[in-house]
Image (cartoon, rainbow, N blue to C red; front, side):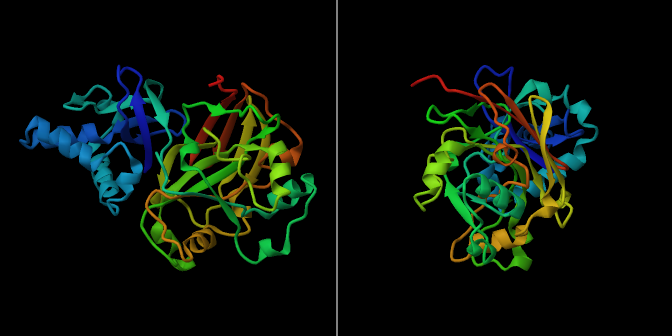
Length: 338
């Protein structure tokens, strides 16, 4: 299942809903799960206000809250989709909470995970580490091979497909990063690698925008990235949370990055040095992972401008594609001065 967060363009006040995207990855029909459930409750004789309240409780606007139901909300979503029939028919059906479904161009897609409790981003691809550190005048330390490495950044920096990425005023070398994100679905601590997938809700695409000129200075302090990453609208995610039942394991999907329609980067998730299971196990060592936690894979080899010495400019559109997860388009702009 492809879970998303959206608001219809036609609504005068943007109420956020959780949906399921069905059909082609590039032209899906977005099913409003709360609207569908409310209509079902009404059809079973429920009262209108109670039907709406219960449907919103089962499918809240927050996917972090939805994942906190221990899998029950996702199971209910699958049941509704199984009973739906052809999703095209739902485009013309409405109930107490509005239409049951929308075409992609009728909605604004937001980040599939609204406010992760934490965002951990790993450096799990060796090719990227070797090349990017070389271009920063450094070598991969021996310690990198001893255990997975990551940093923790602001969850407030997460944004979605139909929002604009920020180009901070203090950088002239903003870069994209072609990554995938692992979303935790079940609480756990000291998780063994063989149990990791039991705690994963699904995967998404992750573009970790990075200020490379700032990074060169900050990494020299031996503290790690701060203003390099994690600024407002720095972590693009989406378009969907693709649940684990649709993920082929081991995850070895093709990954591509385009800038203004031109292919700049391509690689494979299968080239990862530290596998998904190792990342989850390491992140959970001594720390409780919570539903909605986002774990970045790190950049695939050649998956950033710093590796290929090509640099984006304000106004550019970066398109990240990962087979099975969809495509994430991000336009970057300099913000209006506050």
